[in-house]
Image 1 (tube, one colour):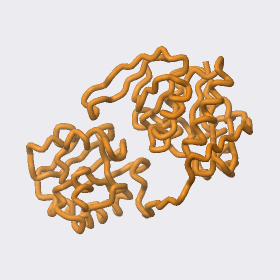
Image 2 (cartoon, one colour; image 1 turned 60 degrees about the horizontal axis):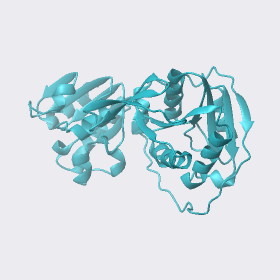
Image 3 (cartoon, one colour; image 1 turned 180 degrees about the vertical axis):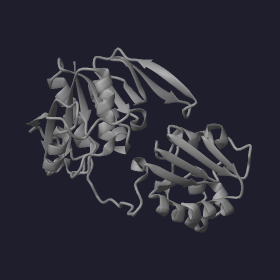
Length: 313
């Protein structure tokens, strides 16, 4: 049994979610092949070959894959599975925006069902995944010839990025369907850690009252070396940008420390951060649901508590 894992990268470095996905593949069992698709990805392929547990790295390096458009990448992945139908039993990718965009197309081309955002591997054909905003965990068994699966990175500890010695093999097949084209991208720039990679996150909710008051969280985060997030309520109110949203419809995070400030703890928000190792909640409402999942809770005025906390750090 061999598992094909789609590497997440930016044509320069391997994303951390790839290491979590390889860990999930390792729990399924069998050889792990890592597919690197992009343009000028020599450095990515070298790094991928060093990932612990990877037996082979397949490299599809072509200008058609420069922006990893799913319309071009999906037929490539499907063709590899079809050509090697006796080898690949599973196709895995991180449950990131790219993974969620790509694998449904792969599943459709292979005419199989997809299993989304698994958090546990029970056996080679049985997995656990959250449903109803994380309020229930479904155990899903698939009898598909090829299991196509997205992996929630927070559910698996990453494998080591070094120590491996995988062979590298070039894939010359090129698909350029012409059905979509890359126009532009705007990347948010910040000196603070990106939310999904941050070890500490400070998040604000509706209790912050307005966007200007997030300056208190920024000051605390800068001292802690933390990322800054927000609840959907804060984003919908226009306090901060969409890319800061943590929750079911935002980013799924699992830092070592999550500090929730002025966040009531709606189900949708909890779904995105409840896997955090330590949760600290600051809220003036002692009945706020956030306290039910918090390891430490402070009932009080956040505008007094946060500046005081900043002074103590």
